[in-house]
Amino acid sequence: MARSMMKMCRTHHRAPWTWMPPWTRAREPVKPRPLRAVLDAFKTLEAPRAGVRWTVLDIIIMIVRSVVVAYGALLTLSLVSPRARRGVRKVQDAARASAHVVLSDEKKWKKDASRDPRALLASGSVERRKTVVFVRHGESTWNEVFNRKFDHTFPTRLIGGVLREMVKFFERDSFFIDSPLSALGVEQARALSKHFDDLRAKGASEDEVLNAILGVGKKKSVIVSSNLRRAVNTTANALWSRLSASGSTEKIVIHSALQEVARNVDTYALASNNGDVVPTPTLARELRIPSLGDRELFDATENAGQKPLGRKGVDSFREFAAWVMNQDAEVVIAGGHSIWFREWFREFLPRDSQCAGKSKKIVNCGVVSFDLCFGRHPDHGEMYAVDNVREIYGGFAK
Picture (cartoon, rainbow, N blue to C red):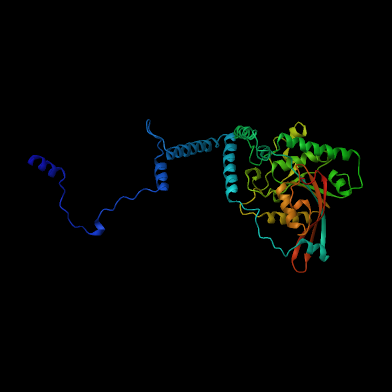
């Protein structure tokens, strides 16, 4: 019994307590924070050993490590390979487009209720009046996946789109970013082209706006398009007979103010730099011609590149309206986008107007004309107003 007691004393013996100043006492270890744990683990970049259970953190580290290594290899290859350079640009475009999805807020701006466009029209202060024709693009590949019915075919459409995006990785092309026309969109653009061709074959009519669109009237007109591919290709398809007429040197002006007002990645422009010509690798095939030089058909001097994150839709509306008023043409034919057009009508139509353009989108490949008025109101200063809206083809969604 004595031996057992002595053994227990030796086992549980503690050193005598001594007093220490508080500033010299050892502090209890602080539990690591999740962010610090991620950073510390990222420094090592060590994959879990065989037989060790994988954690969520391990998987995140592995993914980050793989991305960093792959992008580093791609950057290195880009020094000698044009394909790799296109891949680097694709990664950068995807990153910027994703940032736009998160940070953009261009559809919200403060609207001055007192600046009713009706005041300009009623005051007799209109100084200039131009005719503008809006042409909405055909269905895009983005619309094909996300804007059709969410039924049993949606997963197939989505997976097919992802696979086609992967195939295009090393090309200056994309399925989702600045999405091009879908197969249905091409057919819609061709149907509009045929409609115009049939009218053109009949010769000039009494409708001066329609004659200006066809290029057979007395009124001078100019063709302009958004810097997004689906709008450019639709405009070129619809007016190809006019653009390809013998002796014609006419070009489509690319204007970045017409870039769609939305945050989705399909509204990000691949022609993202000042003066970039919109890449249209499928346009020649759509037009059923052997080849087409970008500089032969497009004038990109008005393309300021990718819209900034801080852009507000109203700023692009006023920029485009001012550009229209400065043209020596009487009619401006503009290829663009449904949300941009709808917000335009909401901004410049009188507040009491019941026009469908304020609540409904123009249908795919629909054509609508109107008068754009400019003047200086005694109380509100410079103002724009939309008047005499008319559906020419397709019109607004029912």
